[in-house]
Image (tube, rainbow, N blue to C red; front, top):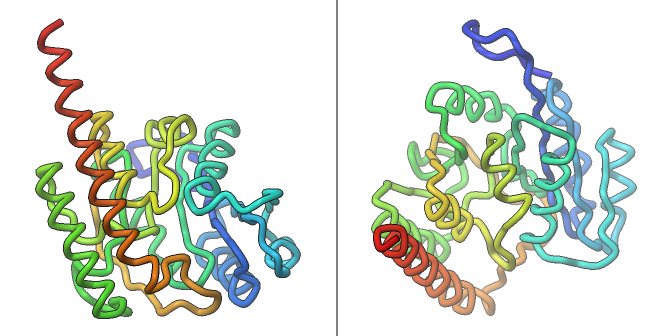
Length: 250
């Protein structure tokens, strides 16, 4: 448990959710770094039907593990973590990738930003200070397009909508435990927050190159991914507009 700022005296509980599919190469190091840099947090690995030794290595490194019997994909794995966080009454849930891209030492900065802003979600962005690994050129172009789209639709500047390094407070945990996008959910989750009138903000973090495993978004899937996400967020914006119209008419 971690103490709140001086104006609060109730300790809060932090859960780190690590979705993992065939991450045996790097998952042990991720957990060891979390235990060193964030000893106040509990670590939960969602083993998403891996065919390698991800589950065993995660347990040996000291994490709690939920083994899914089949591969649900990133959305289903992450929602499993949020459901666990809600059922066990955690104050904060932090999503961290199992491939070593995210630095556990930045977790305190995410928590501090939540304390300062009260945002329902705090996102770690690699593009604010542009330090560390910045992704490939093609992916940066795609992220830039999604960034412009989400910024336009929500009216809030968003620099890294695909970042999987994000911290949620209790309201966002409760929402995501009930409802969470599937497939490639990071961008859609922002629109879900916006539609439910929950807040989010970004802070700078430094990311690393993937330390092991293979990205779920291959070059062949990138066009499908972009098309699906763009269509999805536009539909979600339409739902938001209709909800406001119905509220006004009622």
